[in-house]
Length: 176
Image (cartoon, rainbow, N blue to C red):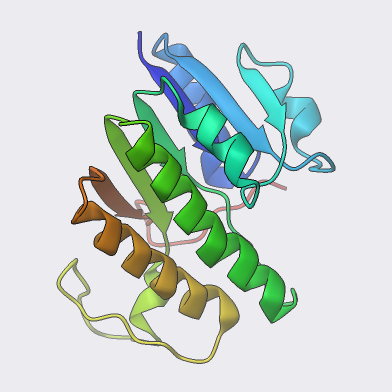
């Protein structure tokens, strides 16, 4: 059994990670915002649900202690949030969780990202060597800056794995 900490565990990807890790017999801790509409669904599962904010350094540090794996899924994923909120959650939140995982000597840190970091590219095969390109959208541009934090802290010993999410058929799937 591994101890697994998942931020954004009520979201589309995070909720699947919560379920899968529980199925595998892992002990799962989920960080979610207090007013998150997904709390009722996740609270029925066999996991520890902690209401809080990724921007709370002390809380994030406490939650990383003793974890084997951290999946960082929390992000502002919308077209309509204030830029200040994108920066606070997607960049400062990433800095908080990375530093906390590094300090707690977490065995593995998995960053969930987006193919939006590659810009508006069509008709080209994109792999991990493809350069990032800002294109003026707060979500993708802040995810690029967040990835740069992970890379920088990897040099200090943060064992990380970045994961862009693609469905098997190339479509975006959403829970209704």
